[in-house]
Length: 331
Image 1 (spheres, rainbow, N blue to C red):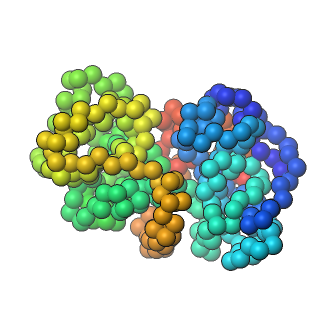
Image 2: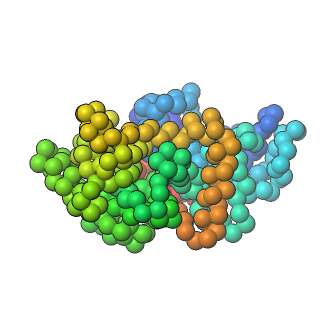
Image 3: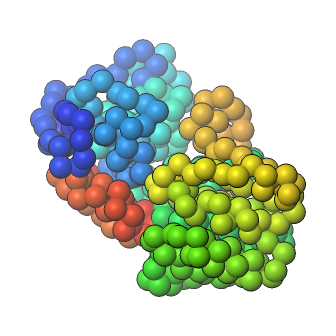
């Protein structure tokens, strides 16, 4: 098998393509031939030892995959050789083969391409958990998405529209704004890369204007940094602020704003919810497959790379230049 390995702490340039023995499944495991692997922001953190999970080196990054079952250990039920599956792996996905616990795999519909499957569970799972389980978003409410052109952001646009919300997509360029409109956003706004106090005030004013003057009901923040406070200042009474990620830095929030607005700040740790609430995760996956079958959601893949070019794919993500999803293809 081939794998793109992290052998030392550092950026994408430190990764090495290696030839390794094919793995063998152990008790309760499946052996997967990987056909496609999604690329996500946590991959860029993990290789720098900046993520909650720190696998022992050498390891292959890559936390979501789709492929075929090649073999399974005795005692595994519900799967057969040849099944097409997707899975969250945490790491190990940027490789031609990997083993994983059978209970972490999900069979994929016959009409779902491997690329779609590999870009499905992380972004849509995160955004569905955020909007449904945490915010309980309702038809007619307004939804602001910070970082709306990224993978989870585009998923939130589609799921927000499917829920009947008015979606405001906030992004850093006109190209990204156009991309979000193409995928369903009702309104867009462009924020500057550097946010001084004047820029923060202008951002708050623009959000309120686009929401109709009363502020937004739900904020989906996949950016953090200096963008968080002005967004919170533009929140409606009893709004819900979803903390999804902070590639722009961990923000400092004046908590008096939550009192004045009667609002809630909610953490969205989807990965933990999958393991802590497996029944809820299964129900959410069923929801998402139905929405996919109905054509209401579909991964927006903007870039494809072979295994040898994983470093370039990660650079695209870490530099916040990706729109929609980036995928590694291994066919």
